[in-house]
Image (cartoon, rainbow, N blue to C red):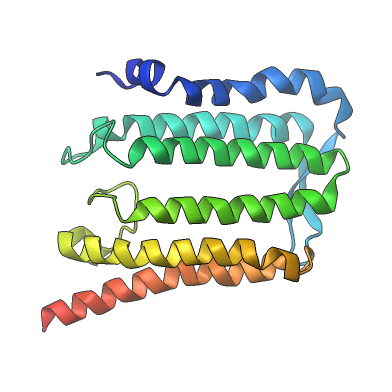
Length: 218
């Protein structure tokens, strides 16, 4: 089945979510400031701004492009290891669509003056994203596009399997930790905590993959 036809038949909910920002933005555009924050420093203060049209269209357009890329991965996979409805790709496509849509909503709420709560929602959303994505990591089959793509995982299907198993546990734990710590850390300091957690999410699976590679060589 062709990707767009599949999306219309099986993932129409994603198409509705992708269209939603383009329908809502014209009705709230006049209430937003001319300059919108798109980046925050380690103290939770905005240090990057852009114009309202760019801020409002960048994420929705990016969301559409990423969804199309994930939809067409089976077509561009050189070894044809991936099918369009292969688990967990449908779930991951929906997760990314919801993530980008949520970030868009948080940017809008922050611009409307709901600042501290917006940062808390952002951290909560990222924690949920990491938790849910980690739950699906272990089900990913070897491919060149999605997952923990390291030289050792791409060369060995067993290394891929074991690395993604460890990565799944790590991401689920990291997502839970991100959510649990929110009430105990000031929003202005939480970006530092989040950065440390994210670093471990990358280092632990990569380190284990290299360890497994060395152990298998012996």
